[in-house]
Amino acid sequence: MSTRQSQGTTLFTALLALIGISVVVQLWLLAATVDALLRHEAGTPLYAAIASGGLFVINGLLVLYVFGFDKKIKQR
Amino acid sequence: MPDDHATPCLNCKKRNARWREDFPVEWENDEYITRREMVKFLALGSLTIAGANFILAGIPHVLQSGPLPKTKIGTASSVAAGSSQLFRYPTNDDPCILIRQTSGELVAYSQVCTHLSCAVIHDQKENTLFCPCHHGYFTVAEGRPYAGPPTRPLPRIRLEQEGDEIFAVGVEV
Ligand code: FES
Image 1: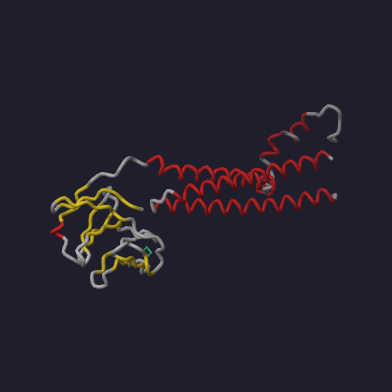
Image 2: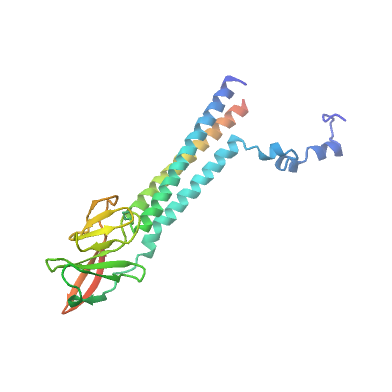
């Protein structure tokens, strides 16, 4: 395995862990939203949804970055 | 016959068929999930969760109807000082409690505890609103939590009195 390839593998694993953690945070936000809805609270769900959307955008960018990196390695 | 001849024979074509990649005969390969697939799955999961969160956040805004109805909940003379009476407002699924304080003032709150939604009860002796589930305590005068796990006050029911009749006219969260 070339240095660049092993670098790619490490990067992929790290980003996979990062995305996994933010998905867990999103699940927690979803649980908080349901909890707030059952308490008839309208403010918290909105903030939770915005935060969840933000995390999705970050996740999406990370995935795009990692696949771009992957493509670059394969082209070499 | 080797695979590397110029025009692949029928055997080679069969061996390299596309469906074999997707449905491998070896079970180990079938259960093998690559990191790439996992990342894609997580990204899709992330999108689904964010979408669900936005839909849930929109529910209260969609369901928000106009002003709450004015509903008769009882008569002033039937609630003695220091005692309480249960009623439902604004819908039949929303239990509430009406209390006449020792000062004579009437107050009403949602009976749903702000901790984990148990029903709060009026403790006449201690002059407090008590939640038996996890021993949460709220003041009678303001519905403010002062002991136990609840951190938010009880939603207050706005009252109006016309003669002897008491009406609930709104909810202050
Ligand atoms: S539900 Fe009332 S204190 Fe927990």
